[in-house]
Length: 171
Figure 1 (tube, rainbow, N blue to C red):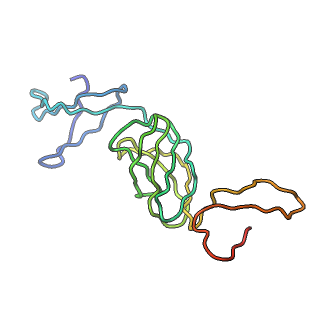
Figure 2: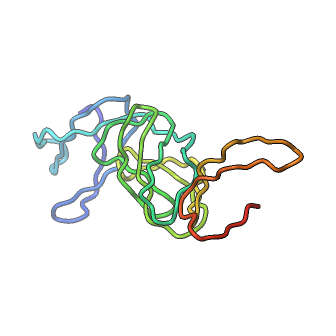
Figure 3: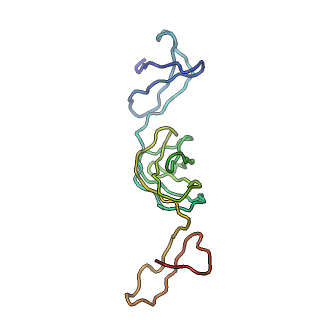
């Protein structure tokens, strides 16, 4: 075979191998247990694709309750049943393919704080983007108008989530 690689038998029903570099495309994967004399003919394939990159996420904040749709912008996203978004370590949610440069995810339930967001086309290999995301108990979405007189006295409207209560303060 053009790309034969050694494999380690992990159990009676599993082998592991390091995948070699390959041009993008779909490749058949077959197994031999007798030194390459006989090969399976399972028709199993692997897709080689450029690594995804993540440049930004919008919005950059969500409430702790989760369920907010975020759009992730980057490159080399492909439609895959295994595509996921990861918020911090271990909070993984399904990614919905929009285009090769856009994915959407619903934020998971989270504790307050900042995390990095990464994506994976295969559920195993993640970007290392460093793109930050904030989970907060209250989120400000809109300020209108966004400018006013320096003498004060103008009225502004703030829109967001979980802004309940009879009194509030603006800082």
